[in-house]
Image (cartoon, rainbow, N blue to C red; front, side, top):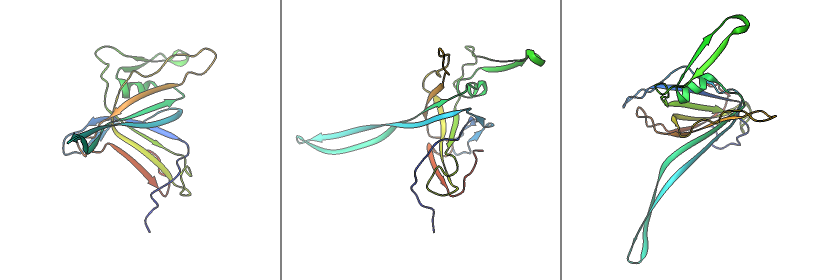
Length: 188
């Protein structure tokens, strides 16, 4: 009997970004090493639909629509320098030793590359109707659509966030995948 095709979706327990390293027409697309998005809080997908209406003879004759954009908004509790490199560009350098170690992310004009990346999020096990199962959301090719929200907050934690627009892969035409697993599977 096939798996059921509907479920509740409760919580998010993990999200990872993987830099898109190749996307040739005809495939396969390849990705770099996955990077954890630390303290993932929200992973929200929205989209835009463009609607065209044909009118004539003083009446509506037809309507057609097409998806014109898919967008994701992500909030996470901790800032990751490696995530910033994957979504915005720049470079991280490590220096010092012992108690004087430093990790520094620098964004320069030449390194602000706005690279393409994949984003995958997953519910906790049992965050779906299937006991022991999970639900994955995968956006295969993203680019930032606005600068990430970073900074500080007076007497409070500062939540980091970013928004990105999706494009279909040239290699496979994959745009967005929703995967319901009968048995929970970790993000690779």
